[in-house]
Length: 123
Image (cartoon, rainbow, N blue to C red; front, side, top):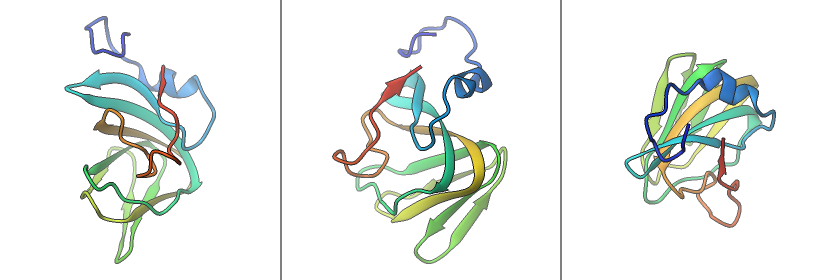
């Protein structure tokens, strides 16, 4: 499948997730109107961060994830999603490994800071 969204067939998210083991290292599986569609494996606590220019979407495919905000927490299970509004500080946490789908404008740093962000990887 081309990352540029050419219609070559279905994208198997489970197969894409099976292709890597690293946590907190999103992989772009397709693009859509200037946005990356990514899958990521998460475990443990991510860093507190915010995105000044974009909202942050988390869709749980497998496992459980807690999105911690400074004033509350949002618990998510498979098939559930949450959108963190732009500028809101947050931290995803997964006690056990979980799998997520993320949709972000291409080039959005996952830590909110390009200097500390994971490198864009396409699979």
